Amino acid sequence: MTIERIETDILVLGSGGAGLFAALHAHDRDPSLTVTIATKGLLGKCGCTRMVQGGYNVALHNGDSIERHFMDTIEGGKWLPDQDLAWTLVSTAPERVRELENEVGCFFDRNADGSLHGKAFAGQTFDRTVHKGDLTGIEIINRLMEQVWKRRSIRKLEEHRAIAMIPDTSGKALSGILMIDIRTGKLRFVQARAVLMATGGGPTMYRYHTPSGDKSMDGLAMALRAGLPLRDMEMVQFHPTGLLAGPDTRMTGTVLEEGLRGAGGHLLDGAERRFMGDYDPKLERATRDVVSRSIYAEMKAGRTSPNGGVYIRMSHLGPDDVAKKFKGMVDRCRDCGFDLAGGLVEVVPTAHYFMGGLICLPDTSTDMPGLFVAGEDASGMHGANRLGGNGVANSTVFGGIAGDVMPAWIAANGGHRPPDEAAIAHEAERCTYPFGRKPGDVNRLRERLMDLMWDDVGVVRDAAGLARGLAGLDAIEAELMEIGVPDGDRAFNLTWHDWLNLRSLVETSRVIALAAARRTNSRGAHFRSDFPEPGDLETSTFTVVRQTGSDLTITDEPVQFTRVRPGESLLVQAVAAE
Image (cartoon, rainbow, N blue to C red; front, side, top):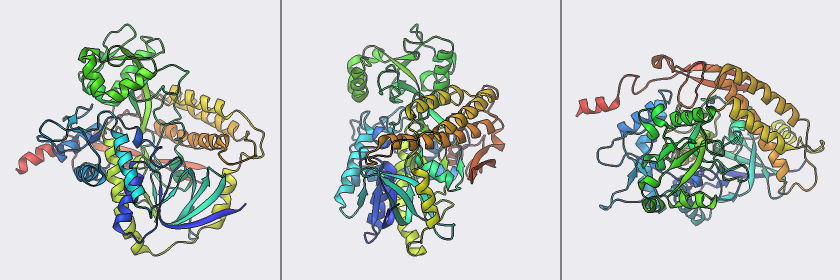
């Protein structure tokens, strides 16, 4: 098999907020380096950042502080976050928002006095979420994309799928990435001195999910096979209010963002009774995990809307005001036959964000020399639960850091590293495995996976369901390995890519289920009905998964309380220091 070879100094995998920010920073830090962005879709038109509606958490307003944002992040993450990563996130966010406005060209909504408007998001003690209406992600990505295109020397590999990390001949460092050129079906090895993994998460293995269907956890599947440590893999965030438009539209699962509940929206059961008071005194402004479990409980009790979910109502806030503040969502709901401004809209918890991922340091470096990580592929910043508005902050903060760090790392670590040719051959054979086998129904298996993960490894878990889920995953994988796809024209062979998507999803789903079985307490997004208590905060641990060959090992590592311990607060310390 002929594999094309190309070289670059820096390879960025992914064109969301993390990837584009990294490319810009790396280019501007050292314009002599070749920077290449590879993306599974089209530059600026794919990925999850573009889909962000709500906004960007940042401590800029009078009365707020970095310490307050930090404590909200730690407490929201149920004391599982890596505190150094969380501090880097909240302390760098003000700098990054100023950069977005003053250098990238973003326009965010402002108050009458000219200050940035901060809206209310659940789980936070201050209205700090900066936004552009309810289309914040589109604003950020469009402006970043313009800046990337402006820098003509930044190379683009659009519609390129990363399929494997290739080590160097020593087996200790990264040499480059093996990819599929989706447009031709040919394999291409991109040798790079530094690689940023920013492919995004995308938990599309669940029946209801927010990311687009091409998101399939490829980055974490590659990292797993490379033997890299993954943490918090049981932590899958379900957004409480995904649009439930029925089975005949792919709009089902699309997020109706946090700002609806922050503005005063009400959740109603099938009989139009407001129910959140039964579950939490914060009502609809409780954290996402609490609201998701509350809706799930209503669904299990049968108190549902016609399509099996619940309702969100905004009309009591004034239809004209709702239509003005939330234009994007009002239009989206209207397209699906719902009146968000004046009526009721059916919603359901939807798999939204993956807190788990590759272990890294605050400078985005990983255990593999030459590999850096940012965005949803990275872990530790959010712990057991991500606050709404911390996601796009996370991507842009750490993407920028990676772009600053990689040129300096290259300067200190020499040139390209020769690849392990046997690894290239093995991974090439692995990705072309389905060709020549009898074609089967990949979509049917994908449907089975989504039902299995929703029912057994979803919003609420227990030992019996997790065991059932793991057995079901083994069965799905066994059947997948028996079927193939026709080996005709490999250009834009979407059935082939569906097959590869499903394999990545099964591999990461197994790790989610194993980590969930390992954690015998309930924290944030992970809730065990057979172990409903959170456990001792002082002795908190996080799960770490590694793969060696075909074997998975799971260990527990203690959380390091490097800045504040349970029962303490940086707010008290800050006041005492004044």
